[in-house]
Image (cartoon, rainbow, N blue to C red):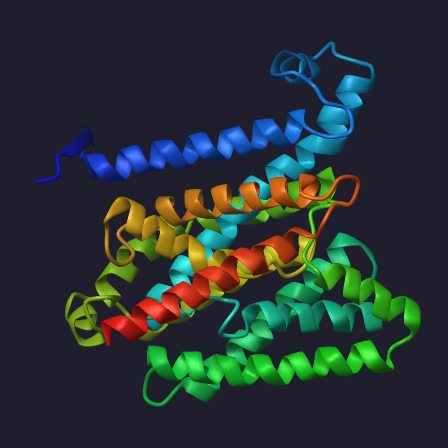
Amino acid sequence: MTADLTVRIGRFSRRWSARALLTGTALAAVVLACAAASLMLGSRELSLAEVLAAFAPDAHGPNRLVVVEWRAPRALAAAVFGACLGVSGAISQSLTRNPLGSPDVIGLNTGAYTGVVCAITLGGTGYLAYAAGAVAGGIGAAALVYLLAFRGGVRGFRLIIVGIAVSAMLSSVNTWFTVKADLDEALRAAVWGAGSLNAVEWPPVAVATGAAALLALALPTAGRRMRQLELGDETAAAHGVPVERTKFLLVVLCVGFTAAVTAATGPIAFVALAAPQIARRLTGRPGSAGLAGPALAGAALLGGADLVAQHALPDTPLPVGAVTVLVGGAYLVWLLLREQRRS
């Protein structure tokens, strides 16, 4: 029997299982280790003491420039963006009640990509233009999928099938743009579409982190309602949960977290797919028993993938999206084989 820890502060009471706490602590340690390695490693290798000294208020010189201005935005982006993708994946998988129901599969990433392509076509440059395009494209794709899948309610399997179809159509639009657009515009879209942390800077990281923090304010309410929905729509409605409004809220949150990342880095595939499943297997907690686990798993996964992207090939940094595709593809094959054996 798993031991539990209960914390009470006034009328607030929360219970955590010991396994979930240990797993969360271990994942947090991995995230911190990845961030520290990202700050220390590179063409100018630094010790941990030198990295910490670079953050001192009176620090100056090349170490501060390298650590604070160049490496710190990337390390923070890997942690925050990985957490955003982990949460968006947990929400979408809970909504569809399917381990394949991630933003990558149901078209939200592709929709955000299409939105940025449209922004580039209209002459937009910079993070704000890309952010506006990603949010508009993600919301448009989500609305289209939601409306096409709605038949007196939204069922998870139908949402996945419709999402795959919409994603395929939007991918063809993106391909058409790459072929027909001006060479400079097509190159900008292709570089952005690779999903990379190589050129990330403080302004987009700060804006995306602020947006994610605002969205996170709705997560406690969303988490409680997700647990009710996983009991079934009828049971949730009997407990007073507004089912369709809650599903719409979850879609908005999923789009928001996905768009915040996509606008800054481009589409990073498979983190949202794998992180929730990794967290559930490590914690032993089925369903959406918590969103902290998927967030930490996503941060650890993206942080580790970015380290590989930076240092796997000497003097040739890779887009982190290329690494996550390799890892996620292997995970997807394993998941499909596992589901086949179970059926």
